[in-house]
Length: 111
Length: 114
Image (cartoon, rainbow over the protein chains, first blue to last red):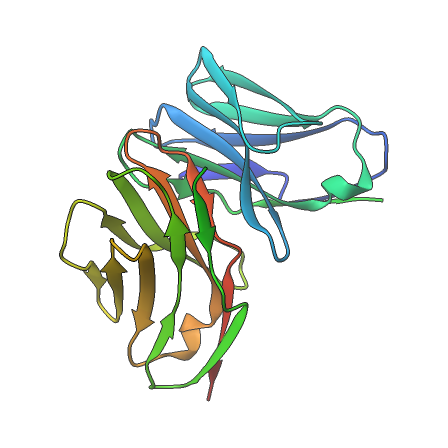
């Protein structure tokens, strides 16, 4: 089983819909992250959490919200999806001073 | 603010040859990490190599090695004996020590020619 699991793997939805992307991990890491990847732009940080009670905005948090339900679970929500939020979304986890481990990504298409 | 620049959007190399991917970064900090991540068509993000800025010795992982030039803020990746499985997007990345947030470059797509 994967250490960092993202669901769904792919999702197509319509403008205006509420979307939740989920991430769970079995690595026991305190730190979790959400990134967005767009062609030609690399990965950009949306939100990050260093423990269950700690949530921080990243570079591009507008239009997104997150919930850290437990140490192992970190969800990303798009309250009202718009087409320019079409992207590949990655969840990652880490311990302090250690490299991040990434999930396999969720490809989200908003029509 | 820290930035990471990869000036080569695409590169090609013949199988079994050596290729070097370039990366420069900008920071005023002295204690940080640098990374190279590989993203194959399967879209996984795979850590290839990590360099700690306070270590002068260049990191090496099998056929992958880096040339870390701290004063020049340069961090290139050399792939020796290129294999078809090395075909991927490669991202250079930076993280401030103790912060753990990663700043990524825009990537270099590497093609391996048989």
